[in-house]
Amino acid sequence: MKIQLKDFQIEAVDRLSVLLGSASVEAAAGEPQAIVLSAPTGSGKTVMATALIEGLFRGDEEREPDNRATVLWITRAPDLNEQTRDKMMETSDVLGWSSVEIIESSFDEPAFLPGRVYFLNTDKLAKHGRLTQYGDRRTYTIWDTIRNTLEAAGAGHFYLFIDEAHQGMREADNGRADPQTIIQKFIKGSPAEVVPIPLIIGISATPDRFTLLLSGTSRTLRPVTIEPEAVRESGLLKEIITLYNPSDDQPGDISMLRAAAREWQAYTTRWNEYVDTEGEKPVVPVLVVQVKDATKTRITATSLGTVIDAVNDEVGPLPPAAFSHSFQEGEGIVESGHEIRYLAPAQITHDRDVKVVLFKSALSTGWDCPRAEVMLSFRKVIDETLIAQLVGRMVRAPLARRVDADEFLNTVSLYLPEYDQAGLAKVIERLSSGDPALVPPTRARAGTERQSLNRRSDSDAMFDALEAIPSFSVPKHRKTSQIRRLM
Image (cartoon, rainbow, N blue to C red; front, side, top):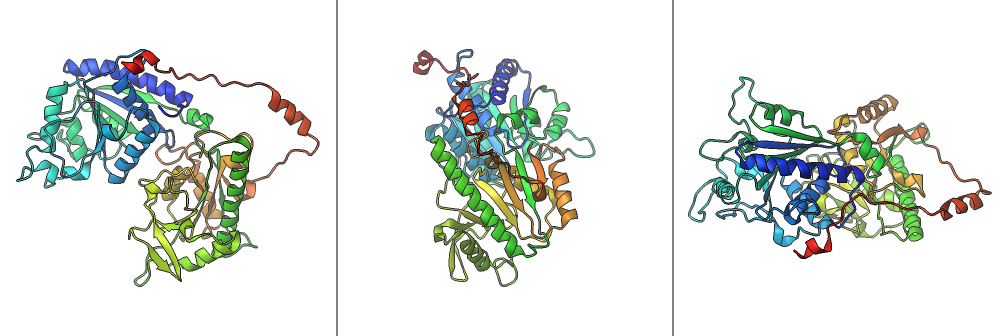
C-alpha cells in the first residue's frame, strides 16, 4: 500500500486474510462461504478491501499470492464504482490501470482475467440490459463470463465483493427462497443465469439484512467487526462537529452564510499555518452550501448571485474557478453575471481550485471529501437522517490523522439558519444516536458549547521542553520483503 494503515485497519485486514484463506479452501471443496466486514461509516472500508486484494494478488510474508485470483466488485451505484476504482489506484502500489476495469454495457469477454479487479453496477444486469442479452455484437453474456471464470479459476479463486451489502437484501414475505433482487442472484443463484457464487465478501456498516439473508442459505458465515471506538481513537475522523443556528443578533440566512464564510476562512488560515510549520502537504478547505430546490423558472429558489456576493464580500474576492456546483443538470451555469462551473461530486477532492461548492439535495452518493470543513444549508427543514449522511462525508480528517498542534483542526462546522433551538437539538440527538450506518463516531455539539482555550503567555518554555522529548511511532504493519517483491 502507498499509505500506512491504521492499527485497527491492519488488524482487520490480517483477520480477513486468514478467514479468506480458509474460506477459499472450503469453497473449492464445494462448501459455499461468506465473509462479512462490518465497519462504521468513515472507517476506511475501501482502503481495507484494497489491502486485502493486494494480499491476494501479491501475497505477503505469511501467505503466498493467489495466481488465479479474480475479483468482481459489485455496487448499486455507478458513481461508487468510479470512486472505489480511483481510491484503490490512489492507495495501492499493486493496482493500476492495467489491473482494474469498470464493466460497461459493451463488455464481451469469455472470462475475467486473473489478477484483475472488475467493477460491475447492478443496473446493467436488468432483464433487458445489453450485458444479459445475446445479440449481433455480443458473443458472451455477463452470466457466461462469470460461469466460465468459475470453471477456469476454480470456486476458491473467484472473489465476489459486495459493497454496501445491506442494500437489496430484503426477502419476500412468503419466505420464498428465490432471489428478489439482482444482487441476491449472486448469493442464491438464478436458473439459466448464474449459480450461487461460492465465495462472497460483503462490506457494510449495517450488515444485519445481509447476514439474515445468508442465514437462510447453506453458506458458512465468517464475520469481522470493527468497533466505533477503534475508529474514533485512530484519528481518521474529525473529533467534533459543531452545529450553529440563528441567534437573536444573527437572524438572517445571509448573516449565517457570512459567519460560515468567516469560519471557512479561519480553517484556511489555520491549515496554512499548520502545514507550513510542520512541512505537511497543503490542505485546501471547502465551504459546502446546500441551496433550495428548483422553481418553475429558476434552477434553484436560492439566489446564487447573492450567495457568491456575500462570500466574496466577507472573505475577499475569490476567482471564478473557486465556485462550483454539483446540480443534476451537469453543466456550467450563469447566475447574476457569475459563471459557475459544474464539478461532479467525486471530483471535488482532487480539484485544487474549488473553494465553495453549491449543491441541492444528495451530495452524499459518490462523494468522499475530507476537504469539506464547513457546510451551510438554506433548506427549511432537512430530515435528520439526510443531515447525518452529509455529516458522514464531512468528518473525514484531511491528513487521515489527528492534529495535535491545533484542536480547532480536529473539528468541522455545520450551519443551519432555518433551525430553531428545538430543531437543532433534534439534529444533535440524531447525530449522537450511534447508528453506524449513518453516524460516524464523532461527537456533535451546539455552537454555544464551543470554547477557545489558549496557552498562557509564560508557558512557552514548558511546551518547548515537552516538544524536545523524543517520541517514536512503532508501525505494526508487516512490510513485504524485497525478495517477495521480485518474485
